[in-house]
Image (cartoon, rainbow, N blue to C red):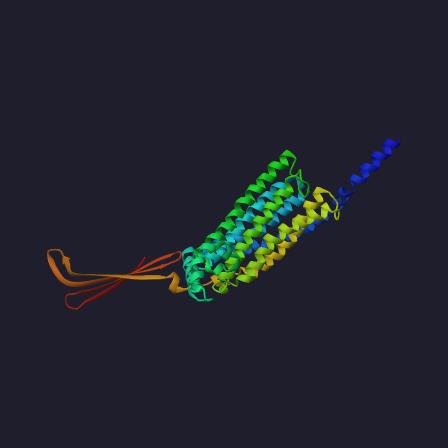
Length: 373
């Protein structure tokens, strides 16, 4: 009898966190779904706004890629919260898209600066100006050694690196894309083998090691992005880069550290050690945060600057003219002069051609025709 009582007490103590999770799961799912619906609707609306005013493809294709992070996060979090069995799969997809979104944001900044060639020229010019400026008496010696200390300059004076700064920035983003994807699938493999231990900071589980690697990789990628921004922020002023940086980094950086913080709270016993409760709390918070991010994106990534296309930049007008001086009419040759001018107008998504023909026949008769195609 005593044995049965002890078993009941043990079962009761073990299932206490599970009972609490079941009580709050349904209302939590309803609230999270509402926030996710708001995030999804606003983000999709903004994406369609950009596609409707798709006047600058080099920039807007990366904006659309960045904006998709909100519906991707919100949808996967709701699915994971609805059925914890899909939690790991959703987490892998979320991590993979997060890596791609970070790369897209870096590519967007480069596109706003006119492309890689324009960025390289600007960085080289800036570097040349700084290296030729005598900062101290031994300026000539420093000029020789600057290129030999490029890695140290990345932390102290990134503006003197020239095109090397762009290379380092791109490498920082690409390495995060690769490591984030590899670690996501490695986590799936370790979970299948039963040695992943999501949220467990124990040496015989794979979670703490992957967390350290991903944390360093993410911080390095974000630091590279910040250094690139510090050098180019003056030229990026028309797009208001600071607000874009804050809104995007809040999604990528805050959500990652939020997951680590929840895992630490669980490890120290601040929250119950129920695996579903930990992942559910993370998914619930992400749904709320994505709704806030979607509202911020409506202002930060507005389509206002893409409503009109500068004519000088996007329109091309060419004119071609030809002349003939003979007009045949059966066996007789009627003197005539025929002048033809063809005007071509090229614009994004259009192809307009205007042909103007002036024909002067014998006797001064004048015929003019205009043809559009």
